[in-house]
Image (cartoon, each protein chain N blue to C red):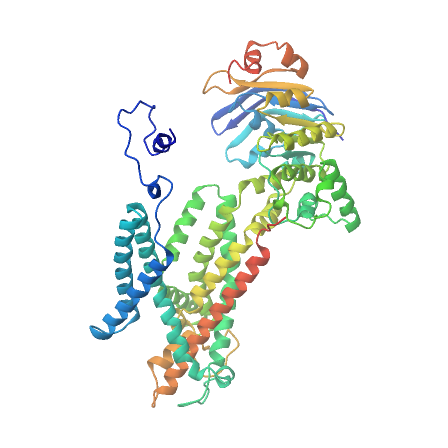
Length: 374
Length: 259
């Protein structure tokens, strides 16, 4: 009785009781293991049709914009595929297809602002993305011309200084939390304050740095280092958090293996724990740098800005890309265009710097990642 | 090289909880000592006390003495790092360092301690250790490949090679075969047999046949009752434990009447 055996599969797992009425024979295409599927061209066709209808709607009824187009296509396609699939494939497959449509739609929706920011910045920024922009400062420039050389140098110096301060403090704090505190009271207090620090508004960090340096330098002092201190307040908690997560991912077995070889604690931490986690730590540090490199408010109050190039972070105002961009946009001269072009070009430069940092971080973490392969 | 270990009246605690009580035993040099017993009876805890690895666990401490050649491991002023250089350990799950090649894994004990060593000496050490762990012929052509690419049994032998590369006096093994298939287990057991000419070996195992096969002496740990500390019930020649045990509990355990 092969037929009865097959049907036994989709019955609940109870003891086999003799069934008086044999189930009606099923058509051969609808056995428990074999289902009809929608052919690929059908789903693709429905997608194309939905898109076409959405474009038509956009052209005739309301305006054609990408968000509306995406949502209309998603709704139309979702309904179409759900209905046809329920008829052809059954309810479970229909729900599966519907959920796939919903998830993909929201993913694309999340992607939209990112892509449109990128397109906008590139589109507006490329006009002044020229050699002059990268080689000239704004000294004596009124109207067109000039460049962001001073701002680029200033941003790089201040960011490097901030990283140099924050990374050792952040990583060592994370090492303390994971390797030394062992759930002690100091560790808990530290974790709490790191969490609080993550939420500090950036202007508060800026004002804190100003207030701190007023004690040493007197009121009205402006210097790159003050900005670095303000940015460090923002960067340290991010580094601590990401490093902590990475260190906790290192299996305890590796620490024990190292201890069992007679390796001391600090060598185990530096050469096994940190070494194993370095790929993740580098990624975390890069994200932290990306987080602070675009900060404007704390730099406005601590570093100010200037038209000429200042490479000494310990004295005097410095130009930085975000502040440069802000002033070019907020206080343009007449005509406005050259100022706005410079603001966009500065924004584009900032994005490119962050992207380059990300690429470098990926490269570094690939080099240091735990090796696989035979 | 092999050293004799005298354990005198050792109690082990996790915080307030007394995990193992009153262990007194003498572990012979150049022999394999097996520790058997049901789960949670303190075999692994006791094993870890022999090279102070339990101190990695927060709150764990011991009372009593462990003498390795009449030197108390728990005397004030004894450096646990030094203890672990003399008493090596192989763990239940193979744990090669994932960032290192096979070669670097073997010399990890040397490199992590930043000891200076000539390249040729290091090559010799790698070859000798891998040969000692019966792994040389399988990996000699791919020493630069990552250690995590080996099979489980090979990884475990790599861990043994790594342990003997630092030339300890004693090798502790905490269920070294429990994650391995029978063929890899056989390879490790053969290896244990070879190693005992040079090292004192203490092995914890759940597999009584394995204890009978590889060990010269066997200690049986048991709980008196749930919630009670584990203790060493019987310690004798393996032959005697498995043929004519002195205690009823031992006989029940090895004959499979409980556990």
